[in-house]
Image (cartoon, helix red, strand yellow):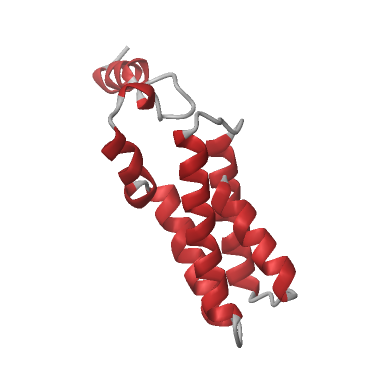
Length: 125
């Protein structure tokens, strides 16, 4: 076995086995929990996609979609403080980034009620 294959094997051996790299949140402080949605790349991408999608809309949807996203995130934070856990949370966040990305890419204009419901659901996860 040459040096390159040995280094590749060593690097592969040293990578973490966790599929979701959010271990240790139970032992973090309140500030870490509050900062996570603002500093996590997946959350930032979802917020950016909501803003882009809202900019493609017309009328009240331009402010209603981002406002709904923020309100739903605050509600999700309150649920977290209350100890409520939503299963497959990180998968839901990744799915929301994908869904919002597709909505932006295709420039979809849905009815206002459906747009707000989707935004609230995706912001909650």
